[in-house]
Image 1: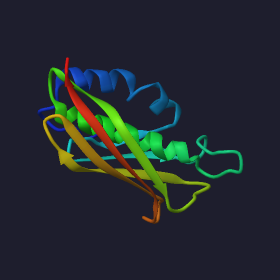
Image 2: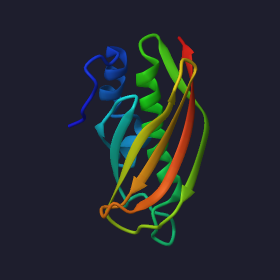
Image 3: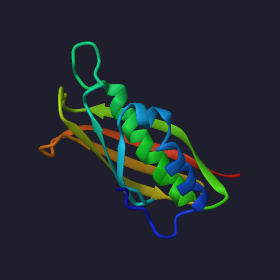
Image 4: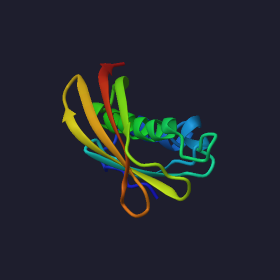
Length: 141
């Protein structure tokens, strides 16, 4: 069950619920646990998201990070506005071959036109796997 802020834009809620967060998010098994502009959390299984030698694909870390950063920015943008990613980077610190990854997204800047979030991916023991930083531009519809 995803925890959503009570004042969330109904159109955004409809899009999130109707698409499950988007086709790629569903394919990767990402499950949103908590969503807000300031802090969001989601999990993703390693299984099905590995590269050729069995490690979690670096791009999977980025997809989890971008999913959290984009939704958090869209929540901050509010009704009649939307977020578009303009920059993302990732540092991979530790590999993983099985289990569940948790992404925790924390706002660094929540401005009128830009949002920057840091998303930290950890394993089931709480060890940092990667750090993603994402900046979104906020636009009017």
